Structure formats: C-alpha cells, structure tokens
Image (cartoon, rainbow, N blue to C red; front, side, top):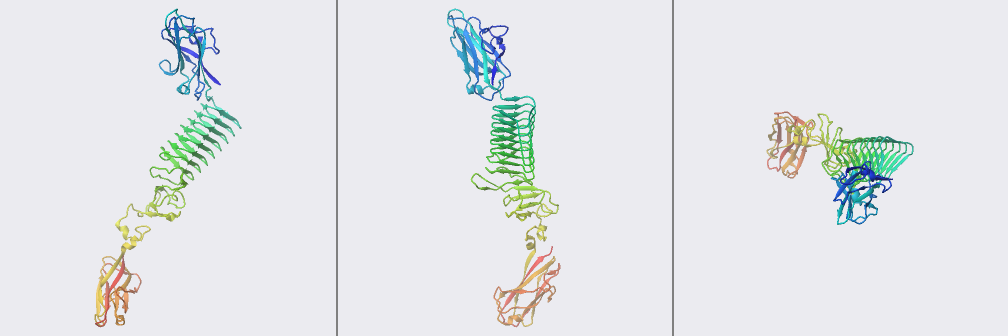
Length: 557
C-alpha cells in the first residue's frame, strides 16, 4: 500500500490567497482545478508553506518517494513568472529535502511528478514533520500576472507493520512482514506460530514465544522490553541484534545471530539454551548461562569476550571461540569448562598460563584445571587453616597429581623453621637434606704400634643428633695382609663401641677405598652435649695404610 501526505495546515501564507485557508484549496484526493491558491499580481519572492499529513510512518525504504503538484500562470503573455517548490522537514527554518524550479510557466495547467533520489529520501528522519513551500517571483515587463497552484501531494511506500495493541497468535498462524514490525504492547506466539521479518523487528513491550514458535529476522532485531522464549522457540537474526531489556531463554531455546549480538540488559539462559554468534559478542550488563547452555563464537572478537557487568557461567556451561584466542587480562574461572578448539590454521588453541580460583582442590581431569597450561596457578579459598592454599600445575597427564601445593601449610611464606621440619616444605626432600650433616675424623695411621690405641672425639653437638651411617675412607693404600689386624670402633664414651663395635680394617685397599661400618643398633641417637668418640687399635710399625672415619648424621628437630 501507499501512504499519502496531503496539505493539512498553512503556517506561512505570505501574499498567497485562496479560500478560508490555503491548504484546503489543494488537498483533494483527486487533482482538481475547481479551487486553487495564487500569489498577488507581480509577486516578488512571495512564499507560502503548507504542512503535510502528520501520521506518515517511516517505510524503511528510500524508493518511490514522489512529490506531485499542479501549477500555471493565471493568464497568457504578460510578465514572466517563476515557481520554486521545496520539500522541507521542520518547516521554513528546518532541513531542505529537495528543491524544484519552474521558469517562465505558462497559462496551461501542468502536473509535476518529482521522484526523490535515494539520498534525498534517506535524509528524511521524521515523516511526521514534512511540508511543501511554494515561491512565486516576477521578472520582465508587460501585463501583471500571478502564479497559481491547484493540487499537491507526497506519495511514499507503506510504513512497516505496526501493531499497537496486544497480539496473540495461536496454532500454526504466521505473520510475514517485508519491512518492519513494531509491537507497542505485549505479543504472544503459541504453538508452532512464526514471525518472519525481512527488515527490522521492534518489541516495545513484553514478547513471549512458546512451543516451537520462531522469530526470523534478516535485518536488525530490537527488543526494548522483556522477551521470553520457552520450549524450543528460536530467534534467528541475519543482521544486528540489540536488547535493551531483560531476555530469558528457557528449555532448548536458541538464539542465532550471523552478525553482531549486543545484550545491553540482563540475559539468562537456562536448561540447554544456546547463543550462537558468528561475529562479535558484546554484553554490557550481567550475563548468566546455566545448565548446559552454551555461547559459541566462530568469528573475530575485538578485545575478547567483553562483559562489563557481572558475569557468571556455571555448571556445565561452555564458552568456545574457534576463530581467535581471546586476548586480555588473565581470566578467573570457577567450576566451568573451557573448550579446547582449533584456530583458522587448524592449530590447537590452549589457554595461556592463568590463575584459577575455586573452593575445592584442583582436579586434573576436569576443566578448567585440565586445559590450563603447565605453570598455571590455582588458589583454593576453601582450604583449611593448616593446609597450603596455593597450587602449581607441573605436569599435563590430566590427573590430580598434575597440581602440587606450594608454599607452606598454615603459613603465608616459608620460614627458617620450615627447613628443619620433616614436613616443612610439602612434597620436597629439602627439609630432610637440610638436616643431614657429614662429619670427618682426623687421619689415623695403621702402624701406630701393636695393640696401641689412638682416641679421637669426632663430634660434641649442642643439639641432639642421630648417626645414620659410618664408613672408613682410606687415604693411604693398605698392605696385603697385616692391615686386617688393626681395628676401629665408635661409641658415646672413650673406647666405647655402642655405635660401631670393633671392626677390622681391610687389606689391599687403594686410596679412596671404602669399608662400610655396621651400626650396632641401626640409626643411633646422640644426646645434646654428648659426644662421639673413635678408638683406633694399631699394628706394629712399618705397615702401610692410613684412613679417616666419615659419619653421616641428622640434626634432630
């Protein structure tokens, strides 16, 4: 259908005259010269303006915008008359949309049919505020003459579908709108009903789609109020989608957008609902995806996935990006999955080294701990006071052992005391090794005399120690027979053998050779301020061989 903008008022009359008012003389549905408007004799830039119908709707199209009017000079010959016509928005001081000039008009009626260019049509932003301006002007000599106009109208395409009240579609009813559909009240679609819109759909109030109803839009979709899609309802958008209100998708409902999705209000997806965006996803407010809902993005994301408000993805929800790796600050995740995916070159995209956060210990076979790179950290806010609360990923076997506690149990940092405690550093041998000491005696000469003894106090500790090993280390090679007659013992008293009983030295031992000594009672404690003594019993002079005693002890904590 076509919309017609006819004269409805005359805010400027100038020197023009007609009946009771100017607009009433040129507003006929069908053109007629029975009445008209005219300038005075010999007009000098004489202007009048008539407003057009104020209920015109935007057709969302720049085609078929035509301004028609009929004009002439009131008599032949005489002075030359020029008629200028302008289409205005906002009145005489507003915007000029288009202009036409007719020079030296004649006395025979002429109809002008002026089609606006697409640029001129697109410059109209308010179809309810349009007017036509007519200006008559005289030049030359001769008899006095007047400019006359008998009819005027603006033709434009029909406005987009407009529904002012509540709309209910039940069963398998279908609404198809080529340009735009506007709901200013509540709209409900039940059953398998569908709405198909080729341009733009605007919901100014609440809209509900139930059952298997679908809304298919190839242009933009704007939901200014609350929108609820339940059951298996779907909204598919080929262009840009904007939501300025709350949107809830329940059941297996899906939203698919091939261009850009902008969610300016709260969005909740429950059940197995999905949001699929092939380009950019921008969420400026809170976003919650529950159940097994998914947000899938296969195009580029400038700046990454943007959530300027609170964002919460819980349970089995997934976010995947198959086009690019999201850049930005290290993300913090809690109990949700990061899907491993391929980039445009077919390469596996792994998340960067990140810091995770959760209330339980990290589980290496579950996300996000599973996909985090080696070197990632995890802080456990639910850890007990006496347990380490920071974990480091050291392996990639998808097992719990991939993650190891770091720092200390029950303390913020490592203290000196932790190095002398058996479990001072969790998962490390550092504490035990730090307590291990090697003690070396003086050098003993085998042939100090047959049966002669040589005593040496190796250690007088101020704290308790435990002897864990003892051996003879030869510093001079022994002979082949007599060296075995010499012996050595260790004890906690001079000449005692409670640590190592008398043990014969060995013959034919080279420099650096070792004789392991047997501890009488295994690991042997020595009290603080006690001592460890060595007694060597030698052989007759002129026998080769020298040695030292080496003890390994642990400092008791």
